[in-house]
Length: 366
Image (cartoon, rainbow, N blue to C red; front, side, top):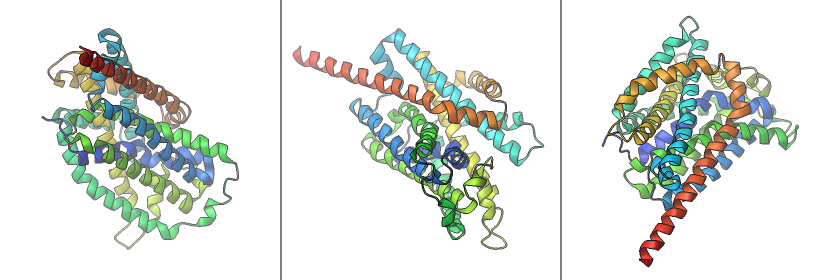
């Protein structure tokens, strides 16, 4: 099947889903609140996000990693289940539009002489093609490209280490723990609570006994990369500059000058970010299509491709007008919004598990 993926491909899809919007924005989201203690906020977000996902994995394993949409129908029945699935799809739809918006916001900063609609159109068209090709195709492409990109990321971090000034991390906890917790709260919603949507593709992983290990490893891996860049941004540029940069990680790469040839690494980082955004958008696009296929009881989802692409393009241009408004909405509202969806999914899994056990008991007694 075109949606079957291996446990290793799940690892890379999840890792890039995590890195996605956060690769260039994480230092700003945490640093604007926690200042020089932003690295503590990022660690707090990673640990908390890991715990939330451990609970989700425990319940999904009990339910044999069925499709999330099927579990919701079994938990609530046909009509109420359809309504809950629609709520889940609306959240996914909104998130997908925001990530597409991240793409054109970034490209307008890098190349302002091109209309943002052009970047939106290209990214949505690529996501449509990727979704039509299936998760299997996305998994293979992502696996191959990620090995190259992560090598570049690790080399970049290593080259930044000599430029880190530990004085930039002082004074420790000058503002207390409240800003640290607030920064961790902001980063928890983007992206760790969003990972609840990955339950929709667990059913396509071939070796389901390896899902838990590789999924949790991907969270630690992706979270570690985000933490490393937050540490690097604070250590190299200082909290004062991080708060004033639109994309601190992108600006950070300008400080790398290994040789005369090995310069302008920020362009490479921009290419990497566009790619991981593509992976996140395509994954969200596929999840929405799978949900529409389930609700419509269709044999495939290709018929929904064009209408969904047009709808996402429309919402992208209706949500937030600029980068500042987008960042404000994300930091102030997104964690609570995504946590509400997380609780809804967890509740659905619990009800589905209870009904499954009752059904098994009735069969045994019969």
